[in-house]
Image 1 (spheres, rainbow over the protein chains, first blue to last red):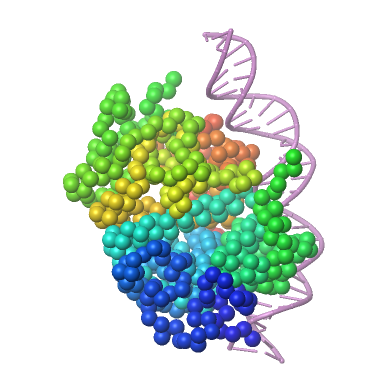
Image 2 (cartoon, chains in turn green, brown, orange, cyan; image 1 turned 60 degrees about the vertical axis):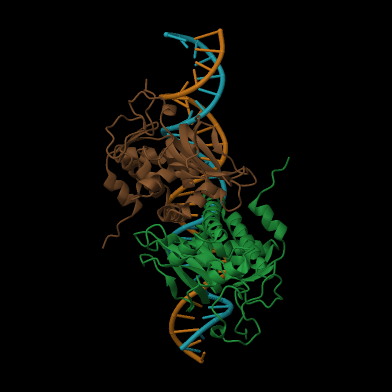
Length: 265
Length: 265
DNA sequence: CGACACCTTGAAGAGGTTCAAGAAATGTGG
DNA sequence: CCACATTTCTTGAACCTCTTCAAGGTGTCG
């Protein structure tokens, strides 16, 4: 039913900002040179305003690409850290586990985002990165990143910003987990997802969830039943239409109100 | 009653690893040269194994020191980002706020730790850093850090590790907030605090909390009453002695069991 | 087409919150 | 140095949100 290049949402929609990789070209991915310079995700994962020579050098950072089948792991807790990964296509979750086996989804990552930062501090990964759909990543050996970012200032700055952004994102998740109620959490989650998808050229109002209710629940600190019930509640209230993993947001403003309850004066 | 240099815990205890700054020397802090090379926290905030010339250069990164009175802010959400701060003495909390005024403590920081990383991504801070006791920090202008870390590889590596460590720490907090129950959260919190204090030469079993029940609760995603009740429960069970902010851990193993419940086979 | 994974919904129950009151500590000003 | 105001902490009781347990429905994939 769906054609093969239907990444991220599965909803056909004319991309606005950035075209899905190879969409409609019929090119086999391996036919494309492994290079950032002709990657249309460049503006998401690379610094802007580079000179041609700098771009050429950064091309060398991407050592190779790697495909990960749905359900497979890009890296696992305990594995030696060697590289950061820029997601080209597909959708990932990262999760940490406590000793007694509970685990917690710490994030969902999509095209243009970087995973693997957790591994730097102790030269080994502290979480699992699992593909939620068939995916492809650019492998960027970290020692080469460090080497090059000593020479290309904007790359250095960019790396620092990427790490800082992840710290700030996690601060936001802590706020969510520490102080929001179930409806607020799910509303914030949907708004965040749809905003990121929109930045990649997809619809502002429609999305296909690539993760299960249980994974959403883990991320939001809720049980899967609560996630399901909250979706149903939103649907009853006419805020969203939900059919399994297909979600259509009918009233974005209502979701925003839920996240930030207005005080009545 | 307490003498003035009673940092961090207020419990007099012979420091093991690293001496509290100026403890018992009677020196006015400003009398000490602003330099990492003769700072006894160096091993906490600076990379190891530097040559003398490298150490001399890193000394230059620390532009100045700054004192912050208890209750005052080191930086605030929205303020322009210029510098990272290495804590010399005192104790901080960082907190983010949602638009509607709720706020969430995202961390507690003590001597040797770095604050301000949140500001890098957008050149402005996204959280507040508040001193919970009179404090002093080393001000490290970020552009100078970037400049120098292009030339001193171990400093570059160190910066990356510091940011990665913060990401991993926050992953741990997400696990705590997303999947642990009140007792588990408080036990994990106490173990973490006492472990960090111990690394700074303080007791493994005794500590003075520098924050209120409300601040602990905010950090742990609980209400202050729940924190109080849980402390009382631990005390009843003979796991800790609690007298206001003075805590003595009687059974570390019991706290560990609470954090990681053993499955009975 | 059948097996399996995933999702929805109901009912009962638990853990944590809210509201309230009082006690203990801390800080302030006379 | 003491009295008083303020902040912080503790504890109880009622309540509420979310979880747990259970059953059945829906969708997907080999």
